[in-house]
Length: 223
Ligand SMILES: Cc1cc2nc3c(=O)[nH]c(=O)nc-3n(C[C@H](O)[C@H](O)[C@H](O)COP(=O)(O)OP(=O)(O)OC[C@H]3O[C@@H](n4cnc5c(N)ncnc54)[C@H](O)[C@@H]3O)c2cc1C
Picture (cartoon, rainbow, N blue to C red):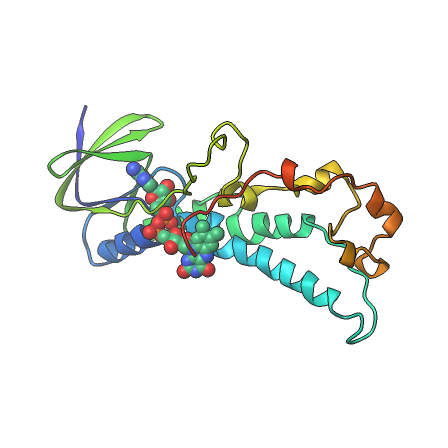
C-alpha cells in the first residue's frame, strides 16, 4: 500500500477541525483533512443551525397562542413540514457537504473521506470507501474528533428505539402526528380550544397521551 505524504493530517472536520485545517492550508502547509461523515460536523447538520430553526418555529407557535386575551384572536395549526423543509433546504443541503468540501479544497486543502486511526508515529490510516489509505504527516496530526450523542445507561433503553438529536433533526414527521394525522396539536386540556386550530371533538379522537410511543430523547453534545 502506498503512503501519502502530507504536512498535517486533521482527523475530524467539524467546526474545530475545519477551521484549523483551513487556516493551516492557507498558511501554505500541505494539509489533509479526514472526515468520516460530513465536513462541518455536528453544528450545521444536527446541532446549532437546524436546532435553531426548530426552536424558532416552536417560539412562533407559542407566541401566536398568547394572542387570545392579549391582542385579539388567533388560530394556530402547527405543521412540522415547513420546519423539516427548511432544515433540508436552508441548513443542511439534505445532509450534503459538497459546499464545505469545496470551501476547504479552495483553500488549498486535500480531503479524504473515511474514518481515520493513528496507526504509527505520524501515521494515520483512513478506512475510505476505496479501501484503506495511509497518510504520513511530516509536521503533525490534529485530533478534532468532537463528540457523539451520549446515551445514558438506562435499563431497557438499548433495546428501545430512541432518538438522539440527530434523529430529531432529521425527522420528516412528528411521531405523535403520525398516530393521529391532522389532529392533536396540543395534548394539554387547557389548550384544547378552538383558538388552537382544533375542536374538543377532534381532540377526543387523539387517544392516550403520546409519551409512551414517543422515542426517548438523549442529549447530544451540549449547545
Ligand atoms: C442540538 C445541538 C445544538 C447546538 N447548538 C449550538 C449553538 O447554538 N451554538 C454553538 O456554539 N454550539 C452549538 N452546539 C455545539 C456544537 O455543535 C459543537 O460545539 C461543535 O459541533 C463542536 O465542534 P467540533 O469540531 O469540536 O466537533 P464535531 O462537530 O463533533 O465534529 C467532529 C467531526 O469529527 C468526525 N470524526 C470523529 N471521529 C473521526 C475519525 N476517527 N475519523 C474521521 N472523522 C471523525 C465526526 O464525523 C465529526 O464530523 C450544539 C450542539 C447540539 C447537539
